[in-house]
Length: 240
Image (tube, rainbow, N blue to C red; front, side, top):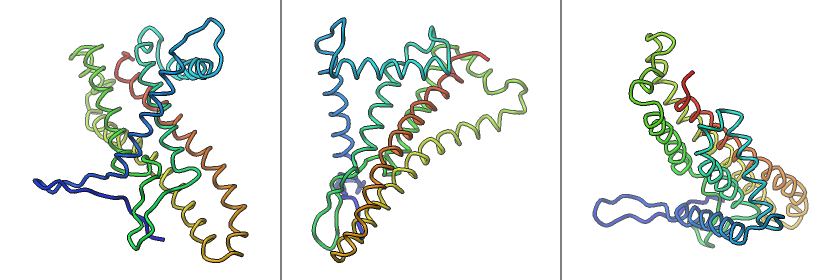
């Protein structure tokens, strides 16, 4: 089955807007926002329910930050790391257990993991990389920031620039590649299962196994994205 996202082109500059990704990414943001607000609405000394989950997630994020930089410096990034980890997890899970597509020859997809789109994945990566440079300038000053590109010797400057580009590409493409592959294989198994009843029986167990493995893939990719964001941040805000 050939599936594609639904695009809208603005009438002035003919710029394409991926409505599928815009819709699903907005839903992911709303889920994160609503759960966070409800979980922190009535704080108690003995947390239960959503508050317990939020506090566990914050402790987990705190551990990621402390593993990469001093808490005195890294404490200010706990909300950023929390948002990245939580949003990525929700976005990666949205293609599980199903996708929604129109029942016509175009098969426009309206529900899938937004992180399976390379533009969104690379945009998130660019957001992280740009933010590291902003905080690098803010916390270390222009001199300290520039020094980071020529330490320990100035001849490393071209390689430092290449490293920044590679950080952006690998952070975004790793996320996209894993989530896209997860959804492609799921669509193939579903397509096989709908061709005939016996193929549906044979494809059921592999599909369930792949769904379970997809949860692992989505979770680990959310963790890796948040972890690397803090690694890149530590390289810019701490003098080594």
